[in-house]
Length: 390
Image (cartoon, rainbow, N blue to C red; front, top):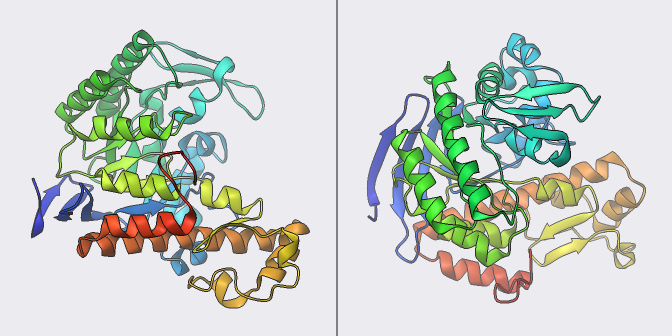
């Protein structure tokens, strides 16, 4: 069903989703999500602030680059400083002095990435604290309780993020258990009028499992849905099929969030398939190593060619880094491991992706998203047929 001009609204206590338009040339959607701490426009990219901070950036920096939702990590904040500290501070927003909407993940991905030092049982997951080795136990109830304490506008169900590849039998058992955990999480949620709890669709590369998992979660009537288990080592064509398989049975009148994807082609291909929300550590992680995302492609600012280059990093960018600093200065900062260099490149990379999402939203309005995609791919040298690009 295509929604054009006539807005379709769905209210779920803590979240109001208004779908303004579905593109004529794809499944791309233009929408607004109203949350406790403000309204946001989608499709959107969310900067990752793992420990209640986007590394090297202040909340004021986030406002300046026009960030909307910021993501924080339940697992890490549970360990340090502790969810009780954040709760007593008045929640994440007051603790870190960020006035916009926030999202917390469930902590599941971090637990399952621990591999050999965790054990999955029906009740939850036994694992060891990666900082000091203490034994820990995380359950759906504990995950939701911690997220209730943290107080983010959007919170995630506790799930298993299975490895890729995984056998059909393993994936089916994992999906079944994740559904049981999702139901337990719904029952444990103490703040449904303030925090929108999303279900997470798993199923790996198996179409029937993705379909079944999505259908079962939709029956639980979550305010929104995430697509998990992607960008974990699978080829891009497999990831795109995973997205399509999940979205096929997700409702059009609720937000869809693709977790852990922040590459340029990942954003475009996700939006084209109907995704509304994205997050990834990519832009800030590569910034800390001297890499910049620019309108002319990816740049390694440490290269010798920039030693005497006193031009802006990206003449088409409107961020403070590009307005005020030269490539030569940025090269000097990154080669000497100065924190300012990491901060300035992080500001630029995040603004680059946020501006890209602004352009994507405008292109959806004007029914020229595929044209914009081809233009950006050509600029970046991205070739989907041979996996070239990022």
